[in-house]
Image 1 (cartoon, helix red, strand yellow):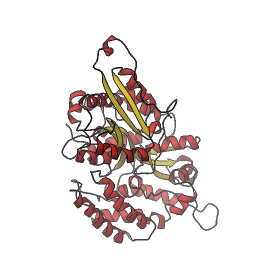
Image 2 (tube, helix red, strand yellow):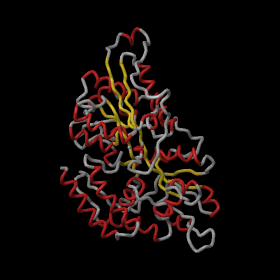
Image 3 (cartoon, one colour):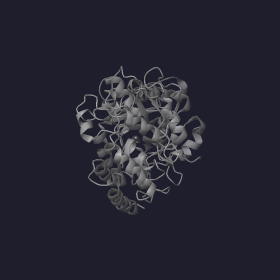
Image 4 (tube, helix red, strand yellow):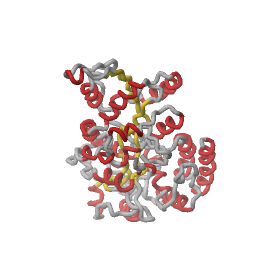
Amino acid sequence: MKKSLLVLASSMLALSITACGNSGNSGDKPEGGKNTGQVSGNQGDSNAKEKEMELKIGLPGSYDVTKKEIIDGFIAKHPNIKTTVVEAPWGDFTKKVQTEIAGGTAPDIWFQENAVILGYGARGVAEDISEYIKRDLNEDDYISGLFAAQASDGKVYGVPHGINPIALAYNKKMFEDAGIPLPTKDWTYEDMLNAAKKLSKDTDGDGKLDQYGFGASQSITTGWYPWTRVKGGHVLDETKTKAMFDDPKSLEGIKIWANLIKDGISPDSDFYGANGGDWKAFASGKMAMFFMQYSVIPLIHNEFPDLDFDTVEIPKGFDGNRLVPMVTNSWLIFSKAKPDAKEAAWEFMKYYLSEEAQTILAKSGAALPIHKKAMDQLDLTTNPKNKAAYSDGIAESGVTLDENPSWNEWRLAAQPIFNDIFIGKLTPEEGVKQMQEKVQSVLDENN
């Protein structure tokens, strides 16, 4: 099996995931209440003669995250599989499933953050599906995101529920009013920062900036992860067992990120608080650019339908390399499920990965599909029209966020320190020293 390009880096809302970032989710609400105990009908003699199986699907976030149309499509196509859907709000589901895992009563298949899935794989909770993939899928039909949940030993513990990468979003009117050429895919970070300085203005003459060229983020996905690497630095090494915050190149990138506010390029946390967060500040014309996750697009469409904006690929770093962080949630098969339930769960995964289901996902706008043909179904008539900024970005240099089985732990160790750097409570040098020690301690405890 080819190695995943995502060992670089592969949530929705977790996507948000944003999870790891600050994104939202979209999708249909369940019709007629909870979709539990559904059994598909007979669709002909050939299907009716197939082996009868039972399958329990877990849906954290319910149909706010998962398209009901996909679940219904699977049920309709597999009348031999008695399908029960168990849904709950994201937080409630993820807490409850821990107890169910311990008791062996978890759903046969469900999805969570990709890094969590890798942890489940290391603990023996998630089934290795690499042989299923080899047996039934043509890998050439999919982008590299198919292997977001591939561990370093080659085992694959899930398939993506959807891909949520980032791109550079820009307000076209603000650029045109300032007489500044629109961003292109050939931009470097230096080009972006030079334009951002020109776009930062005091529009009401009170001596304070109220329009900013770029919106920096404190989150991992759209904030400190890409900036740590913009000078050629790293967060973890290739083995994901060694922290690299104290690498001089990592420190240089963090310094640039930390100075965005001081240099008058980006607003601070108070500004975001007063203006509803980064995407609302952008959509209301108070910021000209920011790194936007794909799942934010439906939010802007809903609240700011007339906003004239577009996207381009994340600029090339100061070292000449482009890096596109992306988040994914992944479906896993419970390792303790019965053999027939595992086969039924794989049938669901195959359907979810089909062109039919992936096209539904593509049209929903909630996440990027991983089936190449479904990519052709993205809506290019609504802003941002250049949605290829996301798909091409993944193809060129998509990376996950150095995900490993201890990702949640080491990320939570680093995040408060980055927050203190962002607000000026710590210098980058002080913060890097603390992060190196704390994150390495987490990595050592888990290896």
